[in-house]
Structure formats: structure tokens, C-alpha cells
Amino acid sequence: MTPSVVFRADAGPAMGGGHVQRCLALGEALVEAGWRSAFAFRAGTRETVPALAASPHRLLALDGAEDDEAARLSSKIGTRCDLLVVDHYGRDRDFETACRRFAARIMVIEDRPGRRHDCDLLLDPTPGRKAAAYRDLVPGGCRLLLGPSYALLRAQFVKQRQAALARSRRAKPARIFVSMGMTDPGNLTAAVLQGIAAGGSGLAVDVVIGSAAPHLAALRRLIGELKLDARLHLDADDVAELMAAADLAVGAAGSSSFERCCLGLPSLVVVAADNQRDIAAGLNGAAEVLGLNDLAGAVAAGVKRLCADAEARAAMAEAAARLCDGRGAARVVGELLTPAQA
Image (cartoon, one colour):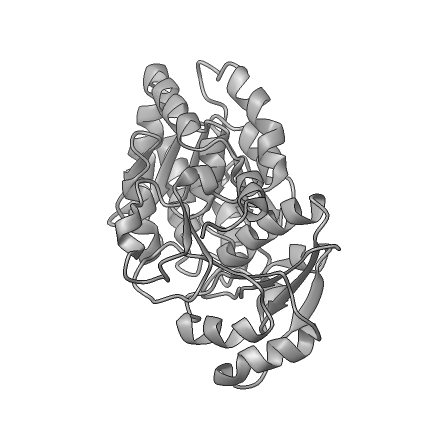
């Protein structure tokens, strides 16, 4: 009998699209393994992550009161599912327990310990995360999948990895990849571009951002004013290819950190949200973390420094590639096929 999975995640201009993106990566792997899938979400999600509408998942739009959401989700599904995957800061043990009536197993994707969960598996890709962080937050039989080896990346990153790592990075960098999140509500991209322009490196710039980003119009104007050799990629589906073609990157220290690591891309990263602090701290030489104070100046100095130091770029690339190989989704599929321990 064909197994079924239901994903529960949201996206929006303020929260970005990271939760949905990593669920889509796992969904891609499960569909490839023969699972039937559905994706449950609230208003704003489909507009923020257009890739959701183009995905093979059955789409379940939710509304109504949040405290009644489990019942509404059950009604939308219309039957039991083999697995419910919850990736949501606004859902915890109460919601998950209510979903036990229709979900045979529950998996939670988390990256900031603190909430209690009623789940059978919990995935946290944060580098260095220890089981002790969840000891009192999950049931005793919960299987913990911790660290970057379980980071959920789309198959396109694994496909690009070998070529990206094998090719010799140019002695003089020529391209830089910039992505400060799908919606970048703080408009950090503007400061990053100002820094690249001020540094006078002459780098060609690929900027990836979502069409729902609140500062998109201002960003277009800024690119024209700075006269950068920059191209704006909206809702890009070829992110791995763009990263593989780059020599450097500037990005937010969220889930996309693992994408850059998979491809061995030397990076400057910025903590754009509180939940990114632990990821940034665990990059361990795979990236240089910049502060938000005078971000443009920090970017200008960081890009100049890395452009002039081929050895530093090589060391950073090697550390990044060691941290994450991009096969996390396949490992999770394997874990789901492994019988639960008694």
C-alpha cells in the first residue's frame, strides 16, 4: 500500500519561506520514493513560495481558528496518513497530540529548542546540536535526527555538488551570490549590495529573492543607482546552479547555509533572525559571520579580504563541504523505513 505524508508549514513576508522550502525538499525525496503527499498551509504561503503551487503535492488551504486546526486538517485530509511533518514555530505538543487521531507517526522539524513536542521523530540540522537539548521536550521513544547530515536540501544541490567541488575556483573571484532570505523583511540585501559596490571588486552579482519580498521595488531602484553588474533572480528554481557558478556568497545564516556548504561556497553570513544564531555559531570555519552594525562596511571589507586571499577561500570551501553533503533528505527517508525501536 502506498504510504502517505502530510506537511504542515507556513510562509509569509515576515516569516519568510524557509519552513516551506525544507518541507518541499523532504517532500521531493518522499515522492521520489513512491509516497503520496499533501501540503497544508494558511493564507500567504502560496504567494510567498510560488514553487508550492508547481509541486506535486495535494494542496490543502487552511483557515479558521488555530485552536481548532487539527480537526480542520483531519477533515481536509479525509483519511489517516502514515506521517505528519510539522515545521512551524506556532505549533507544539497540544497541536501534535490532537493530530494523533489521524496521523500514524509525527515528525517535527525544529531549530530552536524550547517547545514541548509529541512526536516520533524530531529533526534539527543545527551544527553541534546535542540530544540533551531535547531530553525533556519530547517523548522518551522519540528518534532524534540531529546535525547537518540531516539538513533538508533539494536534489539539485546534490547533483551540482561534485562539479562545484571539483572545479578550481578562480584565482581572482568573478561572481558573487547574494541571498538574504526569500522575503528579507529587514532589507539586508540593500546594505549587502552597497557594500559590494563600495568595495570596488568588479564582481558580477547574482541576487536571489522572492517576488513577495516587501522591499523588492526599492531593491530594483538601488541596483540601478549603484550601477552594479547585478542580476535579480525572482523565485529562482535554479539556485544550485547559480551557487555553483559563484566564487563567493553573502547570505543569511539560516537553512540556506547548508546549501552553500554542500557546494563548498566560501561565504559571509549574517544572523538575520534569532533562530539563526546557533547555525551561525556552528559553521566552524565554513563561513565568516558578520555583525549587523555597519553591514555595508563589513561586507565591503569581507569581500575585499576574501578576494585577496585564495588560501582563506580554499580553507573555507573545504570546511563547508565537510559540514554538509546535501544528502539529508535521503537519510530521513531511510530513517522512515527503519522500524521504531521498542
